[in-house]
Length: 316
Image (cartoon, rainbow, N blue to C red; front, side):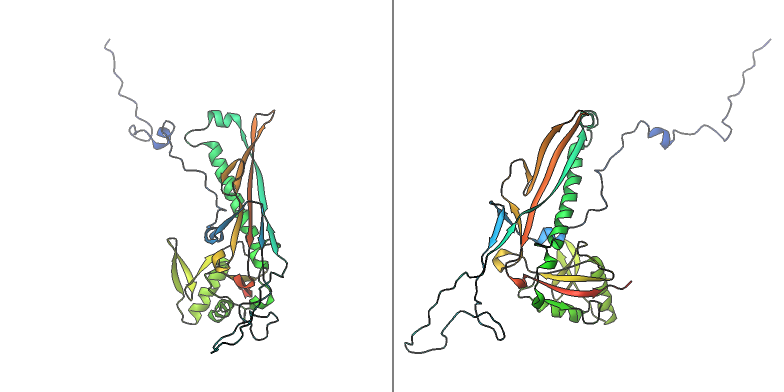
């Protein structure tokens, strides 16, 4: 009896298909990115500050009792001078004393303990070094805390630096061009405006209402909103109290009698300036611990190095 050859059985939904991408992915090498963290911000304040190494851990600010020139209504006398004279009059003489108590800025710090299992480093360390990625994310968190303290710390933060005479209040609530003009006039040689992103948006809205075009200023390759030639640097570390916030005008640089960031000089176990990474051992669970520390502070040499516009209304 002849043998019957059965035709090939087709899949119920049609002819045989090519290898699916889902199946192929099981054997494919995946291109991976380093871990991404949504909480990382531009941290403009850390970028614009000039940093001064403090070998002794404390920055001492020496101040004088006299202004260069006396000003009407001021209780501080000026340097005694003779000007516009002819002949040979007797010239006034004096010494400029350092009578005011020096202000000292000790370094503050932020710390965390980074824990990584030894088997992770031994077996799961390709293509990305697990310790390096963990350390990078820990450092990002420390820098975020550092910027927060440089703005808000009651001992040295920018928000607490301006005395009452260098603070102005928003006239009608929302940040108007006239408000920023009043703020900028409080400072000699202003360089940057520092504001919460919502305050910058509110200022842009007020300019639009008045038919004004704010500046667009290039800062390190980024186009930022500005006013009177000063870039408005976004800083989400400036708090919002209810619906109000504060805008700061900042003059950085020790040579301009401006704000300067402080950090220690060379440290044992230094990973980068002001930051140490120290191995703290391996415990009975085979977990390595590393102590990560960031040291920092901030000094304001004269009162008008930072001026504040308070009561800025953001709306709802």
